[in-house]
Length: 110
Length: 113
Image (cartoon, chains in turn orange, brown):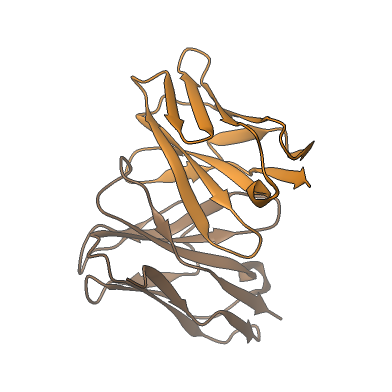
């Protein structure tokens, strides 16, 4: 069963706009990670946020974590066509088992 | 550094045939993972290894076997392929457990007819 669920399933924006994706999960976690997947490629790690952190930045990426609501958001500012990809959240579980959501498909139109 | 490599990139099998997918990493990572990705779904963990000679089951292990022969290599075997195993398979490695990022290979697209 999937632990994280991303919302929306698909998002289409114009270049320069901001993109926000959300992730909800069901059980308590130690950390949450966001990954990007370009079409036909493997996943690439974007950012990891620990359960005792509320916000983290990396370049144009901003991730927030609200453990009381069991949710996280990924904000990409000033989006570019090259940001077109699927974005997945992943949460840790026991026994080294990381659970991925089904992803948000982001399309950035030039 | 090649990172994580997977062979083959594509494969078509008939039902009942067997095959082995090879994953190799050159980052000296202890942890290695095999996932499958089906349309509209996230990745699901098949098996993983926390070091040479060790393996453990993930979320969907049935129909697959694995072996970690050397620290660099993690093999995924299908003894008797079924159409339900048609998927894209990804290998990943990490320095430690789930507090570390995972590095993914490019994937193997497997079709079982």
